[in-house]
Length: 431
Image 1 (spheres, rainbow, N blue to C red):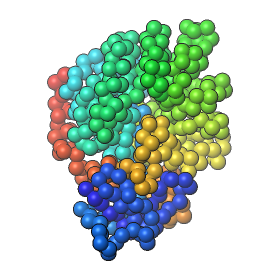
Image 2 (cartoon, rainbow, N blue to C red):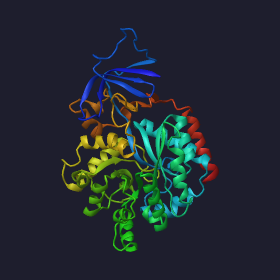
Image 3 (cartoon, one colour):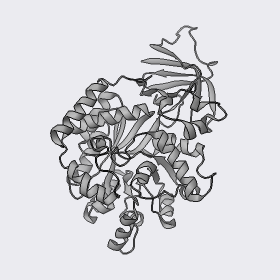
Image 4 (cartoon, rainbow, N blue to C red):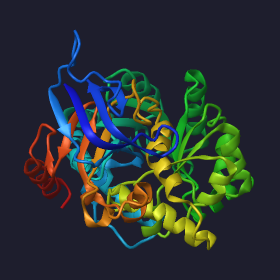
């Protein structure tokens, strides 16, 4: 599929967040041109381009899709199931018992429901940590969505050897799928398991991913178990950060922990919606950014959030950051948008999806600027972060394929079929 999008305001995120008036050209799944059109073939010459589709953007914005750098997609089945309680009670008393009932069929359909919600929010890729990776991959491939998977392995489930098996199986599995080494969290993993995970990290010289420093309780109990070491310092001592990676939440970190992140080039993936709803705390975003820590954003799962809306996450990142510092200038919109796009892509290892430029993957979205909340256009970036919403997403493209446009999905299955199947499975197996 070759596509030309013209008459567009293009936010490339390739350097400064400046808008280019012009067009973007896509051949297959790859961007071949971004510019004002003056240096692109327009139909003349010996080999003029042939377009399967030409899209008049009508002056709307084309930009990289948002990268949701921490998700548990199939937890859609637990949306609004267990709310208004702290993390540890929510997780151990309500979530883990329900998750014990999961089978592969559940994951396929529950993940498709999440993918639909991602698309409506302009999300073009996610980093998913959940069970049954075969079905996670299948859901993404069937719908055309891009997914990086990581393992939520812990002491209660599959053996640690599964981590290596999945790493070898799913890297190279499909163009839309990749896999990262990881575990659920320090507090759900024995030292023996973590040391084995560290062996894999060193064997493959691979980055490492896990939940980290999410609650005060987690940090306090880790220090009690491990001679005063915080979760960050403990995992560092085990060598799990030697090849970088991304860590999820990163709420309760001291200055020494931040230094560890800088030393190892770790990404901090902040999840403000989930952390707010579970009252886990507010990330030290300003301190992390000032120290040079690389950052990304994730929604977390649809049971702890419960909404998979990246506009809400972006506003919470900046809003909570300003409140924490008592400084309206803290965590500016430009930095938040960078975290939501390029930061997320790089945290996920998607180095060919971080911006709009020739040679990059055509993972992009169209933002409707012709709506009241996006007018007047003094600063489109600030409009996106401070007043933008899902209603402004009028097209979501992944790998050159339009999956969502003007409220309609093209994902290989009708929305009503997904809704009906999800409800059927919940009533059959969980009620």
